[in-house]
Image 1 (cartoon, rainbow, N blue to C red):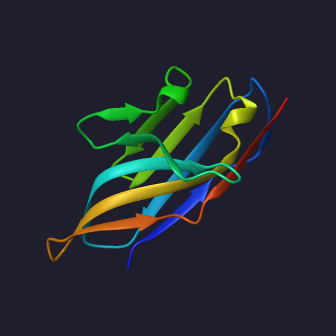
Image 2 (image 1 turned 45 degrees about the vertical axis):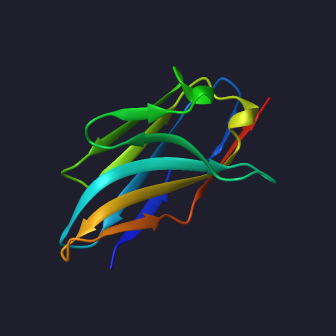
Image 3 (image 1 turned 90 degrees about the vertical axis):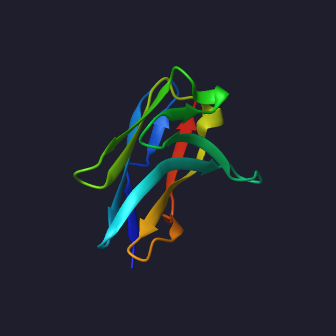
Length: 119
């Protein structure tokens, strides 16, 4: 069983910074993709940033302000968020795609961490 534990969400003033963390617990798996999604109130969940191990992707809205990184030794992914704006407010979800010991690709989600940016 794979479990994702997120942390780092908070209430922050516009222009401030936050660092989200997501640790992946379990055994006998290979992590392929690690990513962060967010969901604003009344909106659909959207991809913010991803790291496939071979490259990174950023949504246009966060390019130049957010940085995704991963520590494979710790099975942890981070999202460094700078110059935060009120539009960045939402619940941030960690996502991983793993290859199980049986060779299947499996998707897992964290429960989300709230980020609120006030002006």
